[in-house]
Length: 463
Image 1 (cartoon, rainbow, N blue to C red):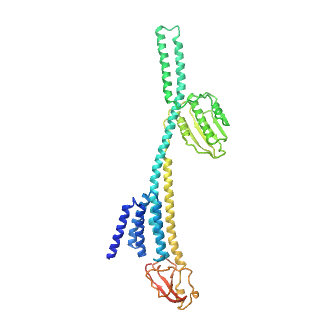
Image 2 (image 1 turned 90 degrees about the vertical axis):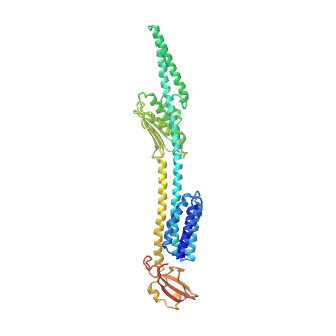
Image 3 (image 1 turned 30 degrees about the vertical axis):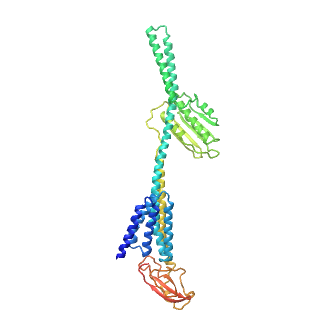
């Protein structure tokens, strides 16, 4: 009784120490826990109350060691060493293949599987952190693209508004020279002309700060296509005039799409179509050779530009390996109610995929163990059966070659079984069912100089 108490205290101390050091020394903690559980099982060679009681503690230490290990190699080595050492001891000293299989099962379920979940938990946390950082960078890039596009649009609006202001200044100036006006009216016209001129100058000063670049004026989509330098099939179905802001948006989308074709699919066939209701399509075929993938910020800017005037935009690969950019624009700029933005769902989906893969791999491992262990037990029992009739027919003094023996033995060296001195014994199953109450019973046949000198039916309740 005192021996059991001291043994329980020893295991308690070992696992307490493992929990204490698992955060800083995960490999050491895992080695201590595996060693304690293996010793407990191999001493008893049975899943008794002590072995079962230590199982949850081992599983928890394994999980924490996988969770806290920065480099998984040391903890993986600890698992491998424990597996190999337990199997070797089982095969050479503690019961043979049955015990070795139980050790494999125990280390796999209580060590490898929790450790794998611990590694996934660490990977999940790292992936989540990196994913959010990456999403934040993408959103920053998208915001930069949107800001640039707003500045570009503001510059183009300046061109139009400035033109209208200059025209107004000329008209007011002409009015100032009208001879039919009184002196007071001329002074008012002069003041109005000065105000309009000052407003145009202030607008120009502001746009010097806001304008992202200085685009040369483009008047038609034909000119945009011609300036691209690509072999483009253009179909322009719009016959009436287009609002200035909308026209510049059409030119901007077309120019950016053709620039992307030039960068990523040089030599591909390109078709540009503008319909009468301002639906724009730029389609290119597959590139003759693979090219690097771009950052996508240009497309984000186009989406923002189209959204700013109240249209919709999409860009996606085509079925034949090419790419298509589509935009539908209104006749006049419309207010935008829903801002475009880069979402984080893609990063979240990657995390979910990683979780599904980890769970699937772990489930496959567990299923393999769950199916493999009873399968091996059935195989081991069936292929090593020495029937009661065969056992009864075996006569002492009979040569081994004359006996009808199975090809395999059930156990090489069962615990607690003695053999006559100077003999070599073999142990066979008594029946083919490895799951009933008599599953541990064995037929013992002992030979000296290849002749049977001893046989016994071993009725055993444990292995």
